[in-house]
Length: 147
Ligand SMILES: *[C@@H]1O[C@H](CO)[C@@H](O)[C@H](O)[C@H]1NC(C)=O
Image: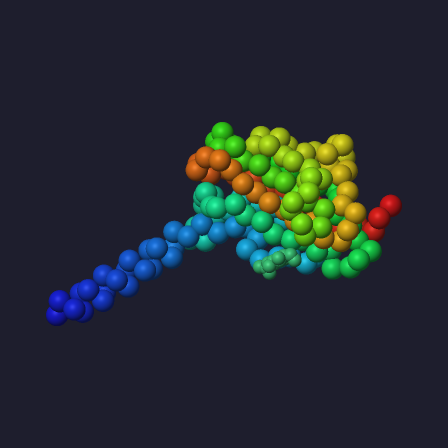
């Protein structure tokens, strides 16, 4: 091969590898539906958990008459990275969150924390951590008519 062909080939391999190791927030856009997932950032190449810059998304119940509640949450692997979930009522993250979950704090169905409610059809769910080791977690929040 000519030297320049090698250079182009090398650049292509480099770009492919860079792309493959991107760490993606579980919900990269906003979400509309009745069951909002909360999960760890992952590497799309093999779905391994990874560390990313803070993740945040807005969950909309799709209907002004459905609010968010029935949170359940489970930490799989924790690494003492200061993982923190915050859920805010509405699309504003400047006020007080309706719930904070520190790394390692699970929420069982039916527990007090599981019964927190939003007042509106939209919540903002954020995840941040202070360290760089990856945590594994999974949770879900449900949209229901106010009761
Ligand atoms: C998600 O919604 C928020 C609040 O409405 C908005 O500021 C943000 O740009 C939206 N993000 C995306 C990826 O659409």
